[in-house]
Length: 154
Image 1 (cartoon, rainbow, N blue to C red):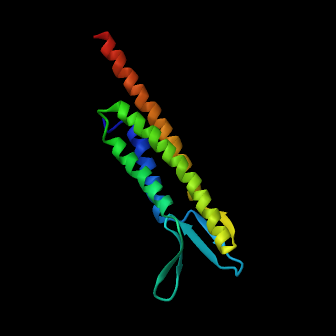
Image 2: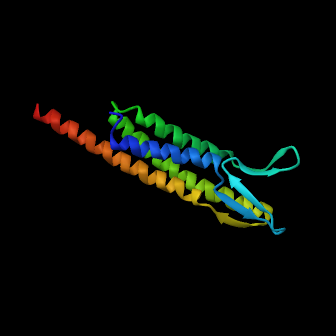
Image 3: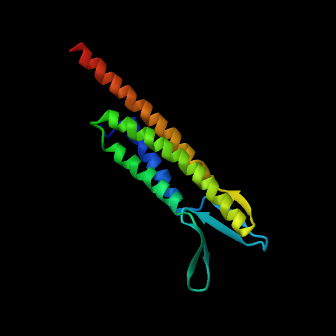
């Protein structure tokens, strides 16, 4: 059943994770006063015609992408509810890991550049995704309980 509420939760979670890939989730204010954005790819500095990556954050990109892809995959496994619940639990842990990695890499970049770290609203997106994963897990559990109760009646 693709039209269930857990599908909406999972779709919103996947969209939020996709947004994190493209929009910076923090800023670094250097001592010179310049502002550098920190995104899922790390800190990129634009020079005349080239883009130079100063601090890479590939693990953050991998975790965010993995979380979004698992959310999308979970939507289409609606006939296997127990597998959906397990994937939601896995994705919940991955989302919490994303939060930790984002903080770690942002602080490491702050130390590397000797800059002040400022957080964007995007830092809250993995936490919102974790809540949505938990809500989806609960809704899938309710569906499974309903199916089992109907099987008991037969």
